[in-house]
Length: 346
Figure 1 (cartoon, rainbow, N blue to C red):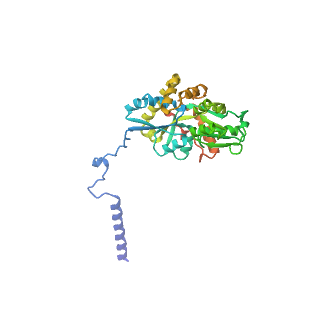
Figure 2: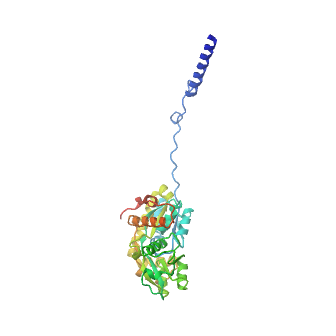
Figure 3: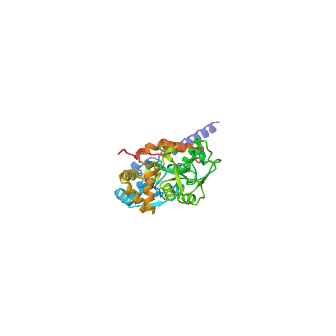
């Protein structure tokens, strides 16, 4: 018994030694901490300067601010001191392919309708609306030989507009619904680019179009159609084009984003005071007929703006409408869509 007791005591002693050795440093050694070795915790990596900025746009007079800033060299002039050596742009027929390009990382900034942005964010786009561009500015045009007596007159007709998920598609469908007209049963809606839609109505392939400026003026000038409803009558002061910036640019280069918005504001204010020149710059950039462009500006209901705060409610209403139409996977919140921190009242 005595020997067994001694053996047990010895085993316990050995175990205690092993446990102690596992929790302590050997005598005469120290823990290798940064302070003891002279090493320091690495500082967060500084984002590399952005050398080139690519801006997406559409050939619409809604986006005059971009054309003016580009032609006058304001983008390069204002962003150059922040390290941006080159600013280029890419044209897109509608918002859907433009947002696809942004999703793919091909553009950093976009002048685009608010509605396509919602669809893109719902599908994972890392970007935010930082500024407004304009409100209203689209028209319902019917063939010249048709009598329009109100929304009921559209029953049985074929209407061309921008593809599903765009501003025009969203506004048109919502307006039809409010007037008790089914967009799926009472009319036929065909998604098209603006050029294809203008061709379709002039060739008599569709009965009406709902398009942004300056396309309605082009159709009227050709005596192939007449404007019967402005989009501002369908939805007063509705948001249309917006300024969108990638999340990466917002996080890594907020100073660049701030200047982008300031330059946009400068171009917007300039255009309001120099509409004839703005029309000339647009025609120069796109090859559009200057007479049609100026006619469009005389009859449109577009309002050029830059403050994103005034379009928040309208954009959130679009989000609700698109969710109801099943264009969005889930409702979107204000914070998911906007970053209002960059806009400063002039």
